[in-house]
Image (tube, rainbow, N blue to C red; front, side, top):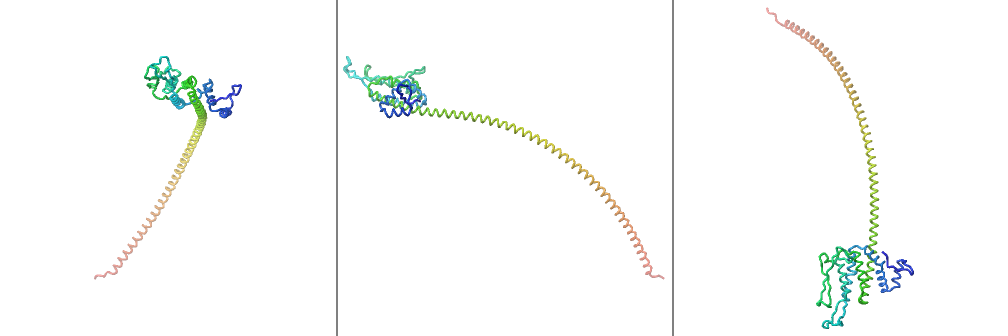
Length: 342
């Protein structure tokens, strides 16, 4: 957005903004500043700048700007300055009445304000319906005329959007094309334009900065997204490579472990086989030794039993001889003690 332009003498080069502001506030009075703003606003460059500024505003902001900056203020203006014309001196005035008719300016302002307010277009459109108005008056001729917009389906409430073309055309009609009936009306209209132009500049600056910041944020977000995407891609590739290397290492480790396990199992099988063989040999030797020992023991026992039996038989024989001897000795004893029968 360009600021109010103060041109250097003899050229079209603009002065620095701080110097412009100093000149317009220090050396120009309020009326001169208003006239300077109006002149610039109605110039070709000013209109281009105005359209550019309007384009930078959101649609709801344009509507609020129209209602508060133009519609309400011009409503107050036309009600304050509803000029009338005395037609009593006309040739053959009707019944000599004092006949008043409101100025056409009221009608032009009313029609154009309501056309925009209720969602019609000034710039022309294939979809544009013509707004309807009623003109009320007690007399069909030169009586006071009260013009009023007639609500139409789809156009009965404040519009939600005003195009830049319509907005620019409305301001051109109100501030440039419309001839003021007197100086008071013109001064009030110029104050409206001055305030309006300043508000447009302030809002345009605000939303331009917001838009630029949004674009910067979007660009930063886009760059960050690209950076993040690239980083994610690189990370995915790194992770994929790491996963591949890990898979290869795991596969190699598993293969080596399988070989080690196989070798260990083989060695264990060999050790178990050798141990079993050694145990079988030991068991066989132990069984042989036990068999030999048992055989020897049995032989010794047999010899002992035989010797014992022999001793027993010998002892029994001795006992028998002793018993036999005792019996004989008993018999002899009996014989000696038995009386002789005569």
